[in-house]
Every structure is written in structure tokens, then in C-alpha cells.
Length: 218
Length: 251
Image: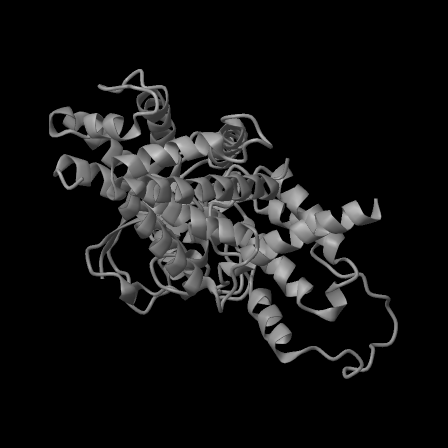
């Protein structure tokens, strides 16, 4: 498959995951309306589109779409990274990056960190196996136990992962817009600014929850 | 002025190659970088050594022959200049300067700093042209071109095919070169009949030559001596997707 098309796969699957992240972040913020709001939201996700769909039907549709996107995104990234490596068999003895932003340079390893975190995150707050509380449906209690000051290492892992996501999104949004052909001389600056603002808002939205729990604001 | 050079020496394509240190004691700040290498080579020939092989032709920044990565940057640290237009006044007396060839699997080293950029010729052969009947030249006013299309085509047509974009790219991609050619011909009425087949064939040849994919990092546009803008890659992507859609419609 041509690299241009693989980039298109990355852009589209990235956009799907990004849409999910935005909804996920908005859902998380329900914690600021109290435990009932968060737990109620979690229950609503399970009853969504009932009775057209069975209970948790919509949840599973979203999970399948996300899983397909994640796999396609990772496979395309691996193929492209291997091509990039093969395209420069002999490295420069002396070469410093001039233009590439930190976000652009950390896309590949950042992606690996995010993937590892997602595995932990699912075991923690979806399956509950790694959660200190781990009661299904008791979302607020699970989150509160997870980000309690005594359980600081989970909070730290979460913060690192979210900041990594922020950088990944900062370059990813801009790169995807360029890949689907939306960038030109007139819009380039605006698109980059949009990507930055988007990434900052997403990061702030996700960080608000663990910080609020750790510092006892909710 | 005095400069210390660390130059990549490689006898042939098969030779592993290495950095060799040289001193040039009597360089002038008014010299171009290629003239500095001429002086070094005089020195080497007088000492009975093999001169450093490097590509050069017009020495006025329009042919795209000179290459080399100077202190980690294709065509050196100055903006919008080729190596032949780079002058020693931009360096300081006593500086150490590292000189390497353009590094890409698709640009194999022939000798020292000379690389084979035939891959670019094969990409052009795949579709970087328009088919026009020979005979009397058509009336210049017969085909109107909107001003912004003409401007954009001209900006892209400034590409001299030197390969600095590939040398600078962290992925060894030739997307900027490819985008420049696609934009140059795609913006003009003469380029329309072959617009879809051009982008499909050129992208296929680009990948077949072993160039990597684009990550929109932007190193290429900074290194480009002709300041080809990064968004030509966006145009390349857009044209490629449009060509695929068109093929599906006609299939």
C-alpha cells in the first residue's frame, strides 16, 4: 500500500479515536457534578439506544470501532516507521533537528507509551482488576480510590500518559489535516493553532479529574 | 581564515566510508563553500592524495547539482541557499565544519560526497511531464491561467530537484519534491489531462525507489534552497485521493 494511503488510514483512525477522546473527557467531567452524576452517566452509557439495542449494545459497538481503529493505526504506524528506517540505512554523524517540534519527534515512542497506558487503564478502570476499589458500576468510588494521595503512582502514570496524549494530538491533528489535504498557505497557520488549542484543552480536561481527586476538590 | 573540516570519505558504493579530518589554512571569507573544497582538493592533489569528489555544475544556485550536508544541514545553515551560494563569511575563523553526503537509501553514495539521485529522474519519468503535440507553438493567449494558479505553479516550479528535502527528512521521504511537481503541473491547464494518472504513477515510483512516508514534520521546507512550501504535500495528498476516487468511478 502506498505511504500516502497509509497516512490516510492513520489520519482517519486518529480522527475516530480523537472523537472518542473528546466524548470520554466530557463524560469524565461529570465527576464535578457529584458521584451520582458520574455513576448515572456510566449507567446511561449501558442503556443507550435501548430497546433498539440490547443493554451495553452501544458500548460494545463503540468498543469494536475503537479496537479496529487502534489496530489499524498501530499497524500503519509500524509499516511507515519500518519504511522510514529503511529509507535511511546510514545515519548522519552530525545532524540536529532544526524544524521538527518536540511533538513531531516523539510521535512514535509517544504512541508506544500511550498504547501501554491504555492496557493499564482498561485493567484499572474498565475491568477493575488493577483498581484498589474495583467495584463494577461504582465509577466514582473507583476513580476516588485510584487517584487518592496514597495511590500516587497511578496518578503519576495517568498524568504522564495524558501529557503524552497531548503532544501526540498536537502534532497528530495538524498532520492529519495536512494528510487529508486541508492545509494550504492561507490555512496552515490557523490549522497549527487549532491543533495546539485542541491539544491543550483535551489535556487540561483529562488532568482536571485526577488533580481534583488528589487535592480533595470533589 | 582557517577552518577545520571533517569530510566523509568513501572510495566507492561498497566501501563503508569514514570521516577524515583536514585543515585549510588559507581560506577567504569571500569564497563559496565549493571554492573551499576546490582549495582543499588542490592541497590534496599537491600532497599526492585523492581529491574529495563532490557534485557541482552551475555554481549559481539554479541547477540542483551541488548537494552535501554541512554541519548537519543540507546545503548548510543559511536559509534559501544552495551549497554553491553559501559563503565562508557565514562561518568563523577556526570553525570545525562537518561535511557529509545526502543520506538516503534511494540516494546511494557513488564516491565521497557524490550520491546517485537517479531516483528523482525515474519519478519524473513516471509522470512529471505533460504530453503535448509538437508543431507550431499555440497562441500564448489561447489558454488563460488564473493569476493565483500561475503564482502557485511558479512557486512549486522553483524546485531544482536537488534532493535536500530527502536529506533533511527524518523519514527519508521525497514528499516535498513529489508535491512540488504535482503542484507545478496540477495548477496549470496543460497539466489537467494527466492529473490523475500523474499523481498515481509518481507516488508508486516514489515508494518503489524506497523513499519513506511523510510525517509532516516540516524539516524539508526549512532545508529547501528554493523555499518550496510544505503545503504542496497537502496538495499531493488531496490529488492522490481524488485520483483514487476518479478511478473507482470509471472502473
